[in-house]
Length: 542
Image 1 (cartoon, helix red, strand yellow):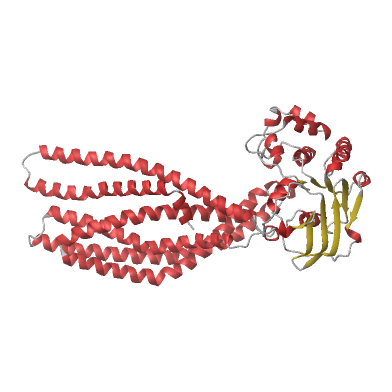
Image 2 (image 1 turned 120 degrees about the vertical axis):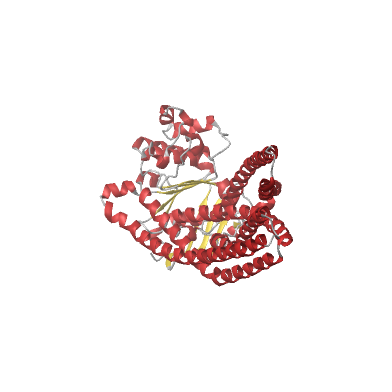
């Protein structure tokens, strides 16, 4: 999964690897210089050479710090860029998943899961490039040096490798399973934590402070239990690691000390050997702990892959620029096990206003979702735009080009009024057309009253707008798009009488070149409709 992003940023990765190796080489020179310095001190009679050693040490420090600074900057750039690219790809895939799947998801949980797993996986991929390069160099250099000092110590090292390999093989599957359970528990806990903040006004209104907080407590109790189980397994793993390391240190103290006593090693050489043995052990521990690290990150990989393996909407075919007619033929649709529509056939033509009516829960919004291709191939029957069925159409591009939709619950982003109307991140907007529409739907005076007009910012959760202002902006966005199909879902629920009259007049003005579909219980809107689709009278089970 990471290969794609490593290849895409290959020049940055190569530069990063080169800098890491360079920094590692400078770091590994220091123990050798230190050992020679100790041997020199034992027989020294001139302080001037001490100054030379100090100068060399300080020079290595300065060079290493400069390289470290560059390495850190390159790392931050790679981690941020690659994390963004992976997050973006996962979001693109989720955007194209079936609506029936998305409606069942806890988006706070999904956000936590995707964000954490993506960042963890990318960080792991970058660190493994650095770790393998640096520790391979340390291992090769240290072994070649130790062999020159003592073959017995080299054999000790081989024995230690075997002990490491055995312990990691025994525990790796147990570690993966424990980590997977812990990660899921953490994600669920943070989802419930988000729920507490997201519903805080509702909690205050209902005065259900402690009872609502108990929802978080249940998840806390679960994560505490799972965390303690993981800690037990992880600590056992760490203890085995520490035991092997301690035995290795004891072995080299005995064997190296004996060589010094017999005069086969100098004190400085023993110091060098101890330092490089430590470096070698650290590098070896890295490669064997890599199993644990891989198991930990395999959880993130598995969870992301589960999402990416979900089948997205089928979407391929012609991109329509205009739609003159929409036909539903013998549509049968179930939501779960519940039959919403049974063998219905409807037709919508340009130049007419249609009102979809029916009691609450009958399926009015679901019918609109079918019309715009939300439930792609999750129904029986056929839906046609002009003479093409949805199977033959690029639904995504056609929806963007041909449909202007005003939701029942308007969605406005924490951005400028201009962006929310045009949905154009580049800032391009036809001001003349926008203000014309604003005047037509009784919104012009509101825009003019804003401190920065169209550049005024809508706050999070639209807290600086009234319900009517939110609805008017959503309606204006729909009309500004100038699509051949206009769909307004309960457009008058928060509008005053004057605004309702203005909206009626504007709909009559533009209907000649549009298919206009309304979902409304407002009798005034039903009266301007050319045709009424009464779902209560269709053959359906509800």
